Length: 371
Ligand SMILES: Cc1ncc(COP(=O)(O)O)c(C=O)c1O
Image (tube, rainbow, N blue to C red; front, side, top):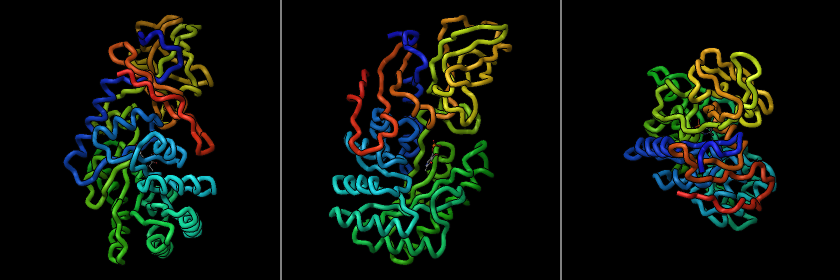
């Protein structure tokens, strides 16, 4: 199938660049003590997760217990939910996963919830594996070091229905900006909060196996930081335009294919991909082969492209690609990924259904990997 026959808007992944990104990240971790447990939320695609594991990742990170259930139901091991789970149905799901696969781990940052998790684990004849979520400065979930955190860690390490596995923290507040000595120092400062918690717990006799942190724009410092055992990078497989020039060595592999539906006035073209096709966090989509063209606005189902810096204007009916500004939010908008090499579709990979709202997540038939 030719790329230009794909119905638009559509998510495209350049196979060659994707393979290169996966390989480069795998090479970085190859000879280091820290390992990669890539974040599934970036793509929510089982085929990509399998390929990441085949190239050396030690498991998969995700942020929802439902995604963890899908991963486990499809045979994936070593799944970390780097997030808190706080409702009965999610806890029941976590208990089932921990009973069936002893290597599913979830985050915790609240003693009352930990007590409930303990009861759920014990009542289900299992132990819920937990990582203590530490606030390393990002101020989302996670506890700052102190009495509350210490009390929680001690409780988790002694509870009959829990298995304390270690600590996690995400240094997202220092992820922005180019690679530099200053950025490395900011990352190290955040991570030292996490590793100090781990060291203090060990001094108290609590074994800390896992110290998990990091992302695609910090992996180069986080993956080398003494004491960090794994890195949760996600969007590196596709890369984002906002990361170009920041010193991370990946290529822009993901684009949305859009059809030009109108050229209503001089210097402008309108595509059929709007906010339902791109998540505009991290900037506007960037037209791939229209040098200087700028997406000025996204409406629900239109993108408004300013072509004034362009000599050759696209015609109505032409299909063009735009780089995806925010990978996590955009892949989630699609059901499938068209995997493209040299203008031809080489495979179609399913993306998991969104918000299943339950554990019985039917797989929309097996991933069709045509390679
Ligand atoms: C908990 C957690 N870990 C890791 C990441 C890194 O993701 P990425 O590699 O896409 O920057 C994120 C991003 O939001 C995150 O929330």
